[in-house]
Image (tube, rainbow, N blue to C red):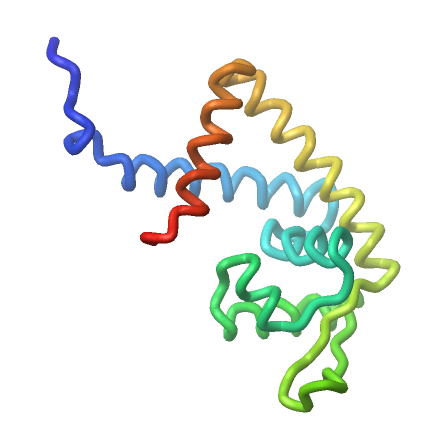
Length: 145
């Protein structure tokens, strides 16, 4: 049987389906083990690792639209995971800060995701996991997208 040409492989579709499937699985596990969604955990990690952030910076870093970040942060603020305050240097902007409760859940979510990553690496094998990491990194830094 002839090997499919790269153009016939429908890489985008395969990536999209895989991403959705992995996201659903990770989201369910994060909800169960850490009490947060995958989207919330991304914000928690960002704030835990880099400190308080402007809403626009969260949007840019996580590749989310401003309305999505606003809704996400509003729900997280209501849950006591973050606080939002006016940016003193720009009255139109808001600064998001991690609370202690948010930090605790970020640590739990981090552990769950470490386990998920270890399971993926085991499933793929270290060499393929490393190659996939490099390839996905290239796709995420490609300036044509």
